[in-house]
Length: 154
Image (spheres, one colour):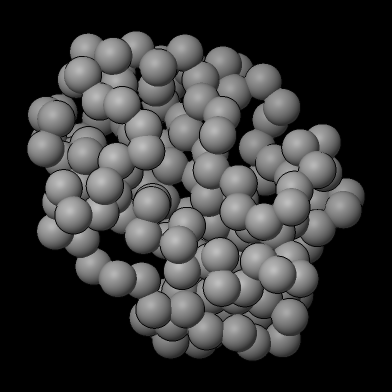
C-alpha cells in the first residue's frame, strides 16, 4: 500500500487505521467480469459499451476509464471508512483473479468526491506518477493485488 502525505494526514485526522473492516461499513459488493484479457466492474462495463481500446493509448487507460466509481465524501470519518471498505471489498474480489495477474487499486479524494478505480498491471503501461506527493489537489492511496513489481505497476 502506498499513499501521498495528504492521504496520510487525512487518515490521521480521522483516526483511521488500515486496513478497515468491510463489516465496519455497509458497502456494495463489486461484481467483476472478464473480457478480452481485462477484468472490469460489470456494471461499469455495461455502461461503457460505446468505448473501445482504440479510444485509449493503452489497455490501462481503458481499464481506468471503465473501472471507476464515484463515492460521496462528506468530509467525515464515516464516509471515508465507507470508501476504504469498498477498496477492501474490491481487493478481496480481485484476489480471485490475481493467481495469474496483478492489479492496482487507486483511491483519490478531492473536495466532496472520492473516486476508486483499478487496472491490471502491464509492463510499460502506467497510470500514476511514481511520486504520489506530486498530486497536490487530491489525497491518493494505492493498494496492490497479486504479485506486483512496484516499478512496473503504477
